[in-house]
Each structure stands twice: as C-alpha cells, then as structure tokens.
View (cartoon, rainbow, N blue to C red):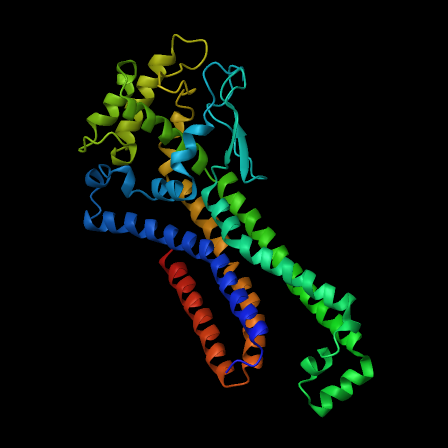
Length: 373
C-alpha cells in the first residue's frame, strides 16, 4: 500500500497535528453549548418557576461554568495584589489581564520578594498554544529541510525520478523548466501554505484574547474567587458577608460554586458591603490567610454578570472563534489530497467523503444552534 514511506508518514503526522490543533476550538464550542443547555434544561425541569430558578446554585449557571472553564481557577489567587503593595488607593484588587504573553511575573509583595513566573490565567488561550506547538515545530523543520534541498539540489541525482514517477509527459515538462525551477515552484506553494496557517493561527489567537478582554468573565470570576476565599477560610471578621452566602444556600459545602446568588442575595451582599465601607476612606480590605488584597471589587455588578447581555457577549465570541474551524478544513485538504495521490488507490473517494461528512456535520450543528437562538 505504501509507496513512499517517508512522505506518507510525514503526511499522517501532519494531519494528526492539525486535528490536535483543532481540538481546543471544538472543545470551547462544545463546552459553551453544553453549559447553555444545562441552564436551559434546569429551567425546563423547574417548569420555569422563577422562585425555584432563583434558588439554583452557581454551578448550574452558564456564566460560572464557562468562566471556570476558560480560566485556570486554581491559579487565580496568584493574580491578587498583596495588601501591603504600593499600588495606589483606587487600584484593582488583582493584576489586569495581559493578552500578549502566555507567562506572567507575579510579585510576592511590596519588597518584590518571591517574584515568580507562572502561566497566564487565560486557560483556553494557553491550551490552544500548547496544542498547536507541535504543528508549528513540524512545519518549521519541514520547511527548513526543503530549503536545504533546494540550495543543494544538484547533489540529489535521484530527485528527478522521484518527482516525475517515470512518466513521459512529466519528464518532458521537467526537462523544459529544469529540476531546480520545478522544485522552486513547490517551495513557493509550501511557503504560501505555511504563511496562510500562521495568519489564521494569529487571527484565532486574537479572537481568543477578545473572549477575555471584551467580555465580563474576568471581573466575574475574580469576584467569585474572592467570595470563594472568604468562604473557605471562614474568618469571623468576614462573617457579615459569608453568613449571607450561607443563609441562602441549601448546601453546607464551603465552595462558592455551591452557593446561590440571586437578586435577593445580591442586594443583601451590596447592602452589607456598603455599610462596611461607609466609615472607610478607601475600600475595606478583607482578612485572609495569604494577605491578598480583597475588597470585593465590582460587587455592585454582581447581578449584571448573570444577565442575558453579559452571557450573550461570551456566546457571540465563542461563535466567532468556532467559525475558524472551516479554515482548518482547508489545511486538512492539502495533506489529505497529497496522501491520496501517494497511496495511488481509491482512498481519495473515502477521504473526500470524510471531508464532506465533517463539513456537513459542522454546518448542520451551526444551523441548529442558529435556529435555537
């Protein structure tokens, strides 16, 4: 079956790495739709009873689930400033998102001791980078190897036979333009293919950063992380906040995802928060074991974060990112087509059928979700 082992093994690896690079985008869309359906089904199962729906826990809400998915929730505490850091009276509780890097430096305090380099909190962004790294390395190595062959093409006496496959017409064409020119055109095509991938890869990364920067997910998840810290540490000085969260939740677990935050809870939290801050020149800092600066920043927007407007921002960004899946199908067609030629069998029909089925499935999926909205 195999005529050119080196080429066919390379193409199989390339196809596999392209599919691996697609996985984060498919997973993101899947998770977004899953969490939306969970929220919808919960409302349906509760017969759209507002009083029952308002008592649902955070773990049943779309905004909590999608935010916990696209951020590294366990790593969020590293992004809080310390109480004693000189960052100004009105500064944020936490480091703002840096969309340009996958690693960030976080400080250990005002003296700068304990500075460390950690992963950026943008979980799905880092996931996509890591899953695409192998593809980039393979394409770079392959392109450099082909450039080396072009530079030293006179040494490869068997290259003509490899390209022409011994046919009279191809030998005649090759004789007219020369092996060097023939191979140069191939290099041009390879360069364009890799350049297009880099362009689309950059656009996808940009869209992923927009998911973080142009939605309210970061503010929301950091506020929830602050609540989570206060609940788990359960300090008496913070009881005026934690007692409200516990009172309205049927679960005794000290985890914010098991708490209920509806309009009534939000109003109580905001009232207690404003009362606490009424006698302070700046926002009160809540006690915690790691000396994090916790002031419950943006607590006044707690209801808005779970509004349809806020959720639709996220869903629209996810849809924009998922549309790039069609570009990946183009990048798959090229190696699959070359592989089918190399195999010299009826595999082309099977592969074309597979591509059509994939495109059809994605199209039906998108149409279904459009109709659902």
